[in-house]
Length: 84
Image (cartoon, rainbow, N blue to C red; front, side):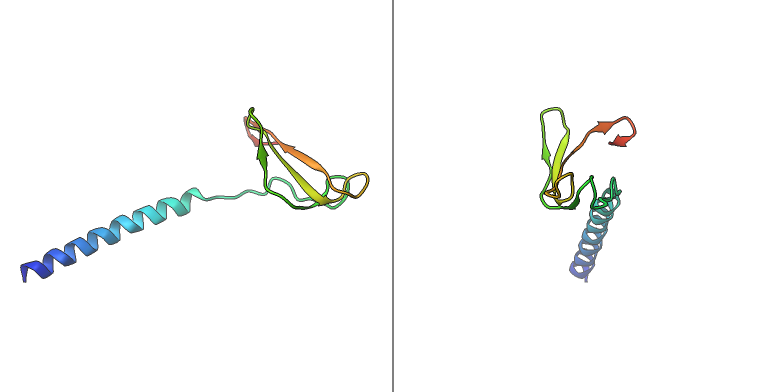
């Protein structure tokens, strides 16, 4: 009887710990749309991941848009209020 209670206690403890881990991870994952590409001069269909420089700026590219229709390169810079 004692062994069953011990196993039940361990199972309950592990369940609580697992819930705390997953809830913490879920609350940290938030997204915010920084820009919606219009397909004009600002580009359309971002086609690659972002690349960072040594200053922490992020660069990406689009497949279409821009002055020639061949896409654009864009830059994200961190500011005091977020990203620009």
